[in-house]
Length: 172
Length: 172
DNA sequence: CCCGATTAGTTGACATCTAAATAATATAGT
DNA sequence: ACTATATTATTTAGATGTCAACTAATCGGG
Image (cartoon, rainbow over all chains, first blue to last red):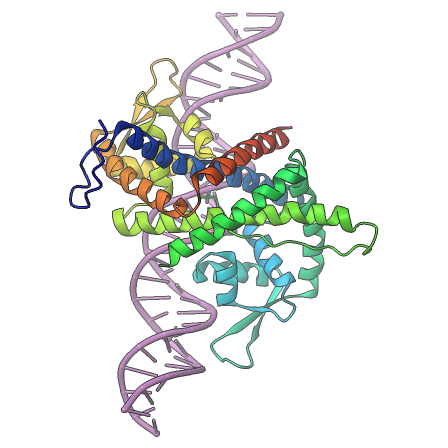
């Protein structure tokens, strides 16, 4: 039963039941892990979205964009926003349009590059974001409150490693 | 999925430096943990989406819906699909419309409840899903390949716990 | 049996989101 | 300078997503 063949030319050749089982379990485990990751994210994301909607009549993407700008006082170029938010450029254009119409952000011509625009928070935008951010932080803290600090640290470390791995695997 | 923004940035609300530092670090940690979770999910999600698009000319929500049906030979009611996919009912209606138009799923009247519909995979749908699922599994395995089995188990356990906590925190 | 409250699903209005095409500007190599 | 190429932002079409209002069918207490 121990057909130890590792023949590269015959990948379809059956492995031992043991190793095959182990491999199959490993495969299932990766997919299950991914689904679990996705479930956690969706739960939190939906919760935060609903709170932003009911509490501030705004949306997650708007909040996200403003959050990026909050820590960039000199503003960010559209492309930089796109990279940080991990969405396409066209998407950023649309969200910026709406926020600009609401007077929360402003497009400013970039001095160094005439193709580029810098998006900045307006005074009103900074003020509104401040109010939202304080509450948002409390929501998130509440969602993670039941997990002991130690486990949160473990989770953060594992996710950090995963992020590196995935980033590497997706770029080449 | 969700009118979804993919990365929300941390607030960092200034308080006094000395007395609240420890608490603030804990709070900050929760937000950073959430951002890291979101970053991992977005990376994987974007990768899988692009592969589904280039390899099968389909999308993640379609794949997701078909995956739910694959595990339910009797079919699923719209509401059940909505719950499992964690999206609204209206959304499920739209995706089902398109998949039905493509002949991959079918709406069947429910015998027990005349309000309800059962959505089932067609033979063509089952076949196409099979092909996609095999590749999809390989993509996911590849993304997680660099992480040792032991750590994957830890991560899965921590996420399981988090999921329970968040589910509890968001329902009451 | 009947009526009000739920439940299942769809619809319409609108906001995100991607992928692809476009216009305008920068940059590098010759 | 000139040209080919790359970068920056927008636009378009189509898919996904929420929410609220709607129809139809079920359920439960009188």
